[in-house]
Amino acid sequence: VIVAVCENLLANKLISDLILILFGCSAAAQVKTSRDTKGQFLSVNMAFSVGVMSAMYLTKGITGAHLNPAVPWGRLLPYCLSQVLGAYVASGLVYLVYYDAIMDFSGGVLTVYGPNETASIFATYPSEFLTLGRSFLDQVVGTAMLMLCILGLGEKRNTPAPEELIPPIVAVIVLGISMSMSANCGAAINPARDLGPRLFTLTAGWGTEVFKCYNYWFWVPLVAPLIGGVLGTFMYLIFIDWHLPDPEPPVEPSKLSTISDKSVSITLDNMFI
Image 1 (cartoon, rainbow, N blue to C red):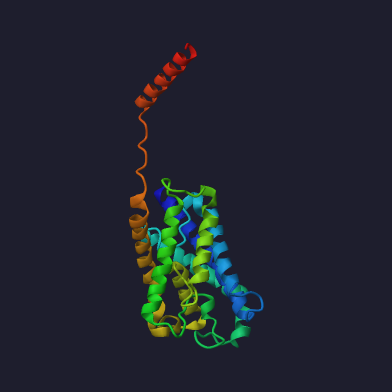
Image 2: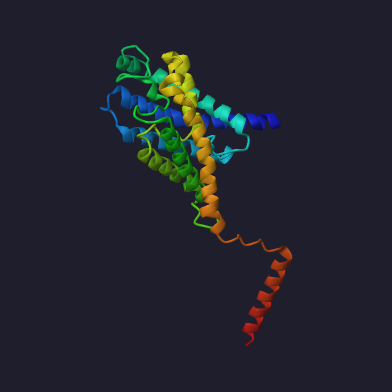
């Protein structure tokens, strides 16, 4: 039974990231290979956001819809592996669907650099002017914003969002972050979202340059979001959680009966005044 439950959880992690990447990277492939004639910057951001919402609705009732290793810390290793695998498989599907378009756009040369590069369809890469330290900060801040906003959605002591509306709200948060913090290095804010597609491009013909390029930049979207997730959690605790009123303790059954008896007594007294 335990094995079956674990397999079910991991399968749901896999399908969550598969849906996310299939939406987002398909949009990126369409925009890139059409040279912006069939979509623009907004198209990719909206597609990733729709992918987030769709994956959450599909799997939220089973596993909590964890698409991002920077968010859950329990069961970290198996969750991460299944998420990376889901992103890898989705990248393969995108490649198969857009194979002809990718080859036509790139002239049959799969590369990370130049005007006809196609590696950025799958993984994130920094702008050429960006320093390593600044790109690291970019990813930390973006993920901290994501974590800070998500933690507030279910806070019963504040203004919790209705359970059924959490997926679209999270999607809007992701859209806001991606539209405001993508210029530097793509706003990965998700280690699995970047590593799975990067591993696919490594094995599909782009070669080791996907890891070596830009001074071995690949580790930034792996490490920085994890730090950003911790930072966002501390920010939520310090600036929000510690200032909210303590939750009211549940009333014991014996006290409930006493309160009920008093209410009946008061009601009867009022009836005979």
